[in-house]
Image 1: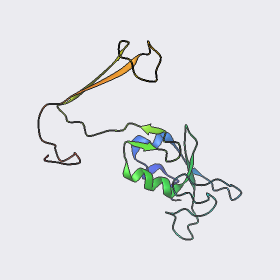
Image 2: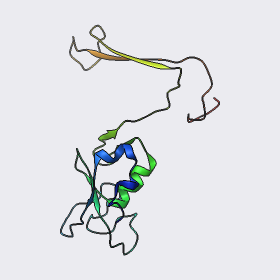
Image 3: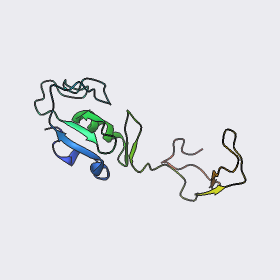
Image 4: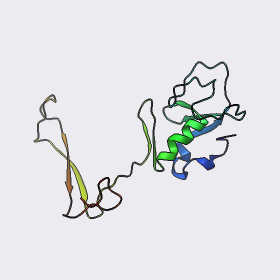
Amino acid sequence: MPLASLGSLPRKLVRYVIVGRPVDDASGESCAICTFDLKDEGMYDDDGDTGRTWSSLIDCGHTFHGKCLEELTAKFSDHIRCPYCKMIYGEIVGTQPKNGNMKTWTDNNIALPGFPAGTKTIVVQYSFKNGVQGPEHPNPGT
């Protein structure tokens, strides 16, 4: 079976997924990744694959073809973002410079349009030293 074992899922993501659900030919649901009917082969299934399975995310419950989920998790090893509801499973790791930091706090004295007076405002402050982007950044050397 394509996803009967958890071997194809990144280790950090295994706890967020129910794998190996049998295909229900009576289902009218669509795969949230390829949008094909779940009862049919998905975009990434091999023709005639007799070991097709479904997989679901544990909190939102959205369901996918097993191979579609493999394709989704192949791109990100730290998190899954449900393509249907955008719920994030795991931790998104960015490319913040190693010598930078981020501080957050709430402030009652900052008023934002559209919010009632006295509403707390979340303040996020980034601080980075001068330097050149490393190879892990989108534009290294700039």
